[in-house]
Image 1 (cartoon, rainbow, N blue to C red):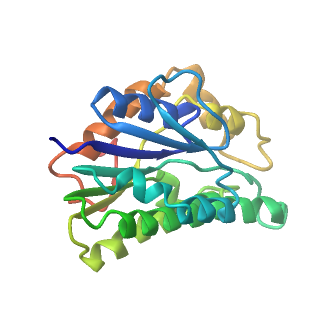
Image 2: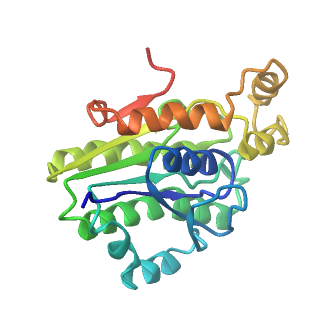
Length: 241
């Protein structure tokens, strides 16, 4: 009997995460979504309601054995670390400390913990892949985005360092998916120019129709994830030639 294809997607209940879960389902994967809310728009999806900004909740779920039960018998198992927040969008000194803590927890701690637990739980899986959903902001600094830029840069460097571990049957990459028409973009367009000086450019991306749809982006991202060349570029961008 053929072994199953299994995928875990964090932040699957909306935006790019929801589109990624749907795309992976369409390609024959059993998909497990981890998010604080359910998606009613994707059928056939396994879902766990969990507040990923609380790493204790994630640790409890991992320790329950649910992760190993899901990926342990797979032929191919993938993790897409998609969940994240852009806030606080303010210059240093005006940021809420509680928002900094939440961003670091969700954008860095969760993907690093989940990636580590995934490898520990999948030692008998012959093809294992981890994709961090990163951002061009991890490679270029933006005024008002110091926290978001720093957290995405952390994911990029995590991929580089994990590659050096030379773990059996593992490929990893940190991919920037481009600018997408999601709730995150709505939040950015609502910021003030004092907090986010580049706001006019982001508003123009919307009015000029330059934002990609979540569905089209998800197809491109999953193409990259499942390609034979995945992992050869440790840090990449869907807009790369």
